[in-house]
Image 1 (cartoon, rainbow, N blue to C red):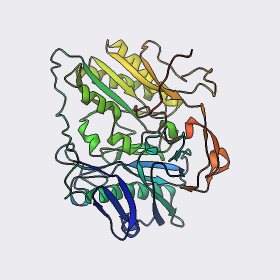
Image 2 (tube, helix red, strand yellow):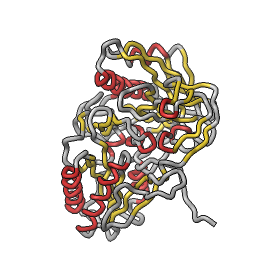
Image 3 (tube, rainbow, N blue to C red):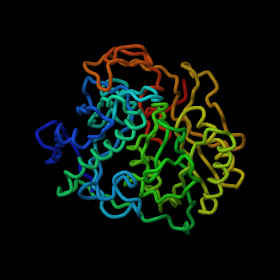
Length: 412
């Protein structure tokens, strides 16, 4: 059930009416209450505002399956039983975004106007920004956990306001993949999840995926929040919870299913930090794709150069099994694009798509206000100042899940 949000406001009560989402500061703070958080505050920014969000952590789309979430975000709010079925209410055009300092978090920013807004998916959404003050003496891991659970709870609370509203659109998700391709090629996905410890971790059904074997997951579970981000590295290459909820490659394969391909399924795989672990996971993921009867596989990643090895090893492993494969890579080719593009390219597989150059410089104009912090520390500048910033700091601008807006053309 899709409910379109056309305007937003802060008000005395939290409600959704006539396409307008109003949020009560009091309700938001109550939802985010936790011993590790001394204070939280929320603010709206909308497309076209002269505003910048800095120190961006995670983004979540408001969704609910009933009162108190009723099964959304399994392992955090809902049970870890079977997901991906029943009605889910979605507030489209809105993101709930956490912004502030956490250790190991690499600084990302979102501009709501100007050239930066065109590069981030969140330059086009109404963003409820959650800023926070840690409780004195609270461990950073406790702050992180409280913020994550609170962000999910707030997103669910907002979507509950639309439970009784007539939807603007009803979208029926397909059933699980058929084993028979019906003469069409069976195409699947491997989505790599960054798993490098505290502040660089991803959760599946509420548990860190770091020690997990590659796993087949019903893609419909993504829509109900089965995958939740807890990693804050490489902002341009981050896959926030919002993008797992709206996985672009899943959406495209669903759209084309039955036309020129059969959507054959989704495999989740970790990104270990050691070479032996990377090789083992890559081999296991390729075998799982073979057993699922996939003829071709699209591979996505998360993170920088270290993650190039994860995707390249999987591409080669699939190639060795006779399965066609394409990997989505971001390049680290220097400001002029003249340096080697990939830290670790595949040895045998050759199908690669670039999502853009991490090092390209973008000139961002000054803005009237900033949220999330007073400075952009990585650039040593005030948060409202004009910036010459590498694409690397623009949140999700080089999305390896395919959400980016960059295109390419041959030079004259």
